[in-house]
Image (cartoon, rainbow, N blue to C red; front, side, top):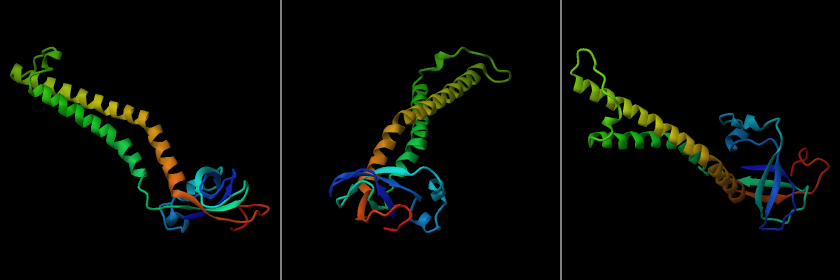
Length: 185
């Protein structure tokens, strides 16, 4: 996908440069009007500033064409973290707790309460097991959510820098018009 932008900082060929994008669409399909509509989020808002690699010498305020690779699936790391870590935490704590219960551990944590019509030993063991496994699942789920909240900023920063610096590059530099966003490059 290619889009027009305005250089904010000067740069030599091969250096990083900060550019300001306006009317950002999420992907090439959105820019053609055939996508999911995520491109609407970039309309009418504040221009987006990104750091990209320049293949040309660029002065501040120069209009530039920025090209982004569309084939990157880095956003899947965000989905895997947001859903996968809580699920993994829940599964691991539940399975490890079940293994500990099978080995005869942890049942002494709760007091015995008789249940009407059921042999006392069977009812207590089942009730305790269910309660302990439910608590373990909730603790694991909570731990996974907390882990994601801690890891998310680092993951977002890594993905953003890789997406902008490695896949966004200046491929053309135009002459400076009076208003860079009204004049095509």
